[in-house]
Length: 330
Image (cartoon, rainbow, N blue to C red; front, side):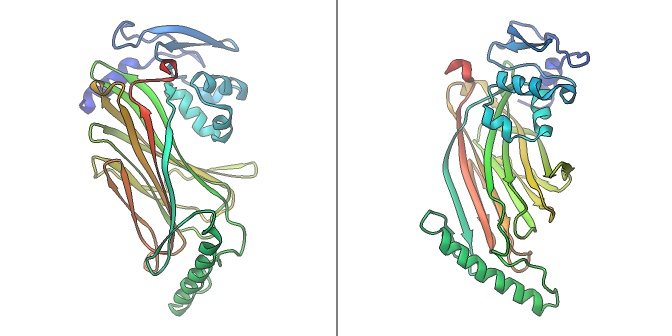
């Protein structure tokens, strides 16, 4: 489906809102399975729900109460644990665009540390302590090289303080369909519970099947330190040159707090793939060294992620789902 037709479809699906109110879509209710099946009321807010479980977007979700937002996310099929993990900015995004969450199966999860000699060390319960020692040795070598270059003590020794834990995940929502295609939002998220030991340029990417087409890429990056909230949405450098995936450099902020963000592709999948297995791969790389000494790079293949670089942690996994289906079909 071409971009013009996709944008026209989304335009037709758009609604005219009052303050925090949503109205039935103006599209033909019998076209393409987009008929309104029911309406749910969340504390006086009436929300139409399509036959496949999608809800219509809400114009000003930031004006809703926390309880209203949580109840609406449950209508979208998000779990309590997921809702608790999402920053409020992402909650507002989900509610504004509408749709429905599609369950993903996460598989082929892998984490690797590549040392300064180019040797990959895969994380297991048995190797974690050994990898920590290798990181400490590598950080000492990195600092020595920087000192020799006159850069001074710019690297925090690994283990000097407890590094925040990292969690990466896939989030999938179905946001529309027409006579030709299903419309989804593919998201790969990153979540640092607190600032990493050293902050340089990280990488993030996602890739998909040959029948899938991305028509738009968006990113976001938020940081919360205590009660203070910060946006670092401009810290991405996005590369859409590969038709099978999107990647980006992420300038991780060297500041305390909980760091959370994502890369998102709005994609179309041909209607004739209905009931087939859908897949997209996700990857994230974190560098413990500046470029020139270490660093991390990422490349894309069909439903796959490859990494390069030294002195870096690399996470990868695959997300699978049933194309065209939602929780109402399970």
